[in-house]
Image (cartoon, rainbow, N blue to C red; front, side):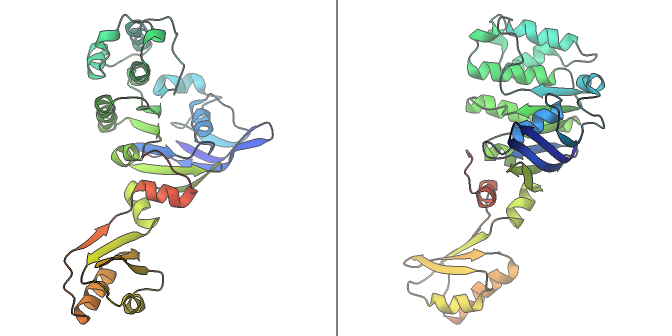
Length: 301
């Protein structure tokens, strides 16, 4: 999927403002605070919204002008809607499967997602979690080349969430690419090969979870020693962009770019001051730390 200089307005409000986004094979997670433009971006890529300017290509096709060629090749899980409220769950899933040449085994998919007990229940009478799982099943049953999943685990219990994660991993193994929007940082860290963070209608950071965590927020080194060490002398030994403090008696923290050289500096300083640290630990910043640093907003973890 390739998006270049995308602009989408609603009246006087610009929801997407010159956004660039490239999603390669694998799982791409799209993160952003409410109102950032991520839903509008994804819906434009799905062909549900027409861009005001810019270009969008999905599997090499324009999702608006070439919708007829694109639709059989993609799967879409909307956050809500897309299902006839009076239709039975099993009926809707089997109908969707018949629209495709080589669908997945419906019975196996039903069992995997825990939908067996509600097959004859109308959509409107399903619980929120059951509706989510049915929408996911309908999105993947046609063996799409690319599937859009909008908040696929919202409202699911832990067991159903893990089953969904396993399904996404299997899709990736089978060569299916996934565009995943989620509010759960752990979900993005667990599933995504690539993460795009959107804020203010633009992509403000993109990379693998490891790249973003390494290159975005700083890391923290902690060590324990005797109380009252001269932290000011430690600061002089550290790079200028680092901070150091005794947070509690005998508990020290260094914040900055933690690399082997800095670790050697700290251990050397300890040796010079006759300190044998009880423990030294390095804390890798999480994707949520990076998100908060870049956007100033929290997302559910």
